[in-house]
Every structure is written in C-alpha cells, then in structure tokens.
Length: 443
Ligand code: TTP
Ligand code: MG
Image 1: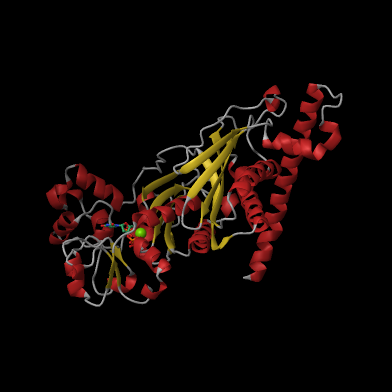
Image 2 (image 1 turned 120 degrees about the vertical axis):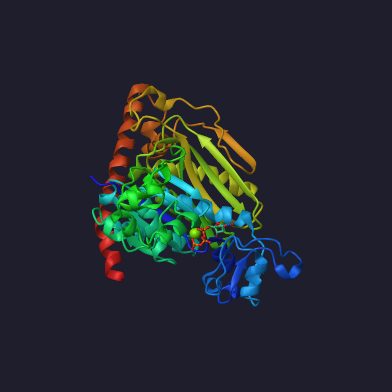
C-alpha cells in the first residue's frame, strides 16, 4: 500500500502571529525584523506578510533593503516566546493525526499518515480536517501537501500558499513535478540552478528526461545523482519522528479568560471528552494525568497524578481530572484562567491493560510530570486508578468493603471498566456515523 506523507507549513508564520495580536497590521505591509528606522538597520528580515512580499521583501533579506523596497512597511521585532507557544499548539494538533511526526522547524512538520484512511477519509478530507483544526484553534492558516513521496509532499505544500492544500495522487508524481522550475527541487540551491539553466535545463521534467551524461558535471557525483533521482520522483525516505510519542493532550486558550468555577469545570470535561476520544483512536496508554492551567498574565502551572493502570475511559479520565481541578480551584484565589489543558503521559508499552491484574488496586508512587513551569504539584494516588475509582463511585455500596472478596471486587471493577470502554467505543461509532452526516447537512 502506498505511503501517505503529509507536509504542513504555516503561512507567513511569525507575521501571521503578529497580525493576530495586532489586527491593525493585517492590511499593511508587515515585516518581522528590527526596525531600520531606529538605528538597527543591520538586522535581517525573519519573515513578512504576503502584502509585503508583493514589494519583493523576503526572509533573510537585510532590513535596510526591505526598507528601501517598501518604506511604508511596519517593522516589528520577533517575539520568540509567542511563536513557540503557537508552535506547540500546532504540533499538538498535528499529533492528533499521526503518532509519527517529524518537525522541521517551529512552523512545519512531516506526518506519516499511512493507513489512516478509515479514520480521516481520503487525502483531501484529511488535509481539510487538519486545516480546519488549525484555523479554528489558532486562527492561523496552514498550507498542506500530501503525497506518497516525502519531498513531493514538501513541494506540494508550498505550491498554493497561503492556505493551500495540494494532493498528489500516487503514480502521478512525475507528471506533477515535470513542469515545475528547477528552483522547486529540494536541494537545488542558487549555484546548482544556475548550472542547470546554463545547460538549458529549466524544469524538473528537463532533468528527468536528460541523459545523465548531458547534465552539468556529466551528472556525476552524489549531488547530481540525488537530484536526478528526485526529478524522477524517486525518494525512499520516510518520516523520521525524533521521538516516540510520550504523551497525548488537549488544551484550549479561551477566547475570553474564564473566572467561574462551573464554566471551567465544563471546559475541563469537554477537554476530557476530546482527549479520551483520541485515546481510543490512537490506543495510547498512559498512567499520569496532568492538568495545565495558565492565569491571565501568563503564569502557568501544572498538577499531575499517577495511577497504577492506564487511564483508558472517559469516565476514568473525568474522575481524575475533576479531582485535580478541585485542588486547583481551591487555591487559585478567584484568579481568571486563560488556558486549560489536560494531558496523559507515562506511556505504557503494552497496548491493552490486563483488566484482572491485582496491580489494579495498588497505589502508585509519585510521578514526575516534567513540567517546564513553576509550582508543579504531584500527588500520589489514593486510589488505584481513575478508572477503577470511577467504577467504585458508580458501584456504590456493592464496591465498598462490604464482604466481597478482593478478587470479587477486582472482577467487578474489571467488568465496569470493560463496560465503560465498550459503551464509549459504541458512542464513537454513532457519533462518527451520524455526527458527520449532521455536519455535512449543516455545511
Ligand atoms: P517559513 O515557513 O520559511 O516562512 P513563513 O512561514 O514566514 O512563510 P511561508 O511558509 O508562508 O512562505 O519560516 C517559518 C518562520 O521561520 C518564519 O515565519 C520566520 C522564521 N524564519 C526566519 O527567522 N528566518 C528565515 O530566514 C526563514 C526562512 C524563516
Ligand atoms: Mg511557513
């Protein structure tokens, strides 16, 4: 089966973030780089918006040159913290669509989406879903290319920027590449392009058709061999994730900071719903749940708890998340919350928990949640797992210490857990079947 590689790259990334924070810059030429009018004319352009590009301004160009091309442009210094914040959000969105992600920079990544057709539909539908998620959650646009061949996906994402989606069907890659100028070829720098043009070669198709001996340098050397292979759409490289997925999470920055406990609780439950759906879809298994919260003004904290068994049901996740939330709510002194997130980490290697293991009832020692920010509070778990706790709560008297033997109680919890799991999978199927139809009806 053909691979399905997706390349996603944000549009005018730094500039788009600046426009988001300063809508007054949206319709004017905007350059991210030191302001040449303030005596810092030696810096270079990080990027610029698409209006500024019409004046010929480009990344890495000296700001003094950008100024001479467009004196009325607004120049703003880069704010890396803010771009990193968006980058994390974008990568988190990408991670919903593939566990194999190869980030190339803050704003772009390859995703290996092979075998996800049943989950996300055809290439077009997959690309549209990712674009819609990015737009809805960040209010930024991303361009996407999809192909069975890695570098073709990269070229495709760049072709219809901004806000592009280009799908190259398997088997059509050579035809797709043929008319494109040689500059598009990954690895063909200005020097190579000049050599090619001097030899009468202007398009990628020209390279593919040319006898290797009639290429510059007679086509010898690794560099030319590589370019020839690419021109013929030969690229065996796969997506190389730098690391296995260690966690899975959902977070939201609210449109307006939230203050009411009830509103925050509801927002948390919604996050739990979305996260548990992804847990079911990806089969991710983790035993640590972490709540992340950011106050108005950006102070960020996390609290986490580790349990003995992976958190696999929404019921279990909600129970744990609410316990953590109540602790936070008590200590936040009425401060408003800007961002809320929930994450499961501490990945398990086994794909399914053993429902009837006696470990099910053992408390787990404190875990290290790996938070970057301040005031991390880890709690050891009083209960064995969120899932079994939820089962106990629901089971009422029967699950108390009321004469049932330990193995009976384990069996009972296992049954409850299996029932929750089955119910939630069934709900997913119903939602996927009728929810999508409903959405299509509305569009
Ligand atoms: P790019 O993806 O190359 O550029 P872009 O996102 O601004 O524009 P587009 O993809 O729509 O063509 O780079 C991502 C960010 O990296 C960019 O916003 C700013 C930064 N960057 C630099 O700081 N210096 C550079 O030379 C380049 C190319 C990018
Ligand atoms: Mg970009």
